Image (cartoon, rainbow, N blue to C red; front, side):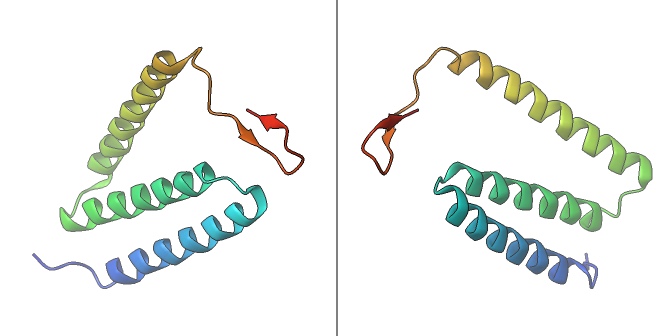
Length: 101
């Protein structure tokens, strides 16, 4: 199975764009979870691109994969929201020494 010429540049573009966006967001927000959002988004985009290219999928199969992954992530989000609702998050002191949630 041979892969398209665009697959490697696409992966490197997603990697560098995600890395730069993560560094900028981390330097602005000083929190780590936005970095993980960008990492997961970049990984998702590259994975979908790889699956489309590796299996030479048509338009309907691409739509089905995107719909399935959307439903999967919506269900995971609902599950984890219900599982962790009401739990206190870890408090971190800010620059003035006050705790923030």
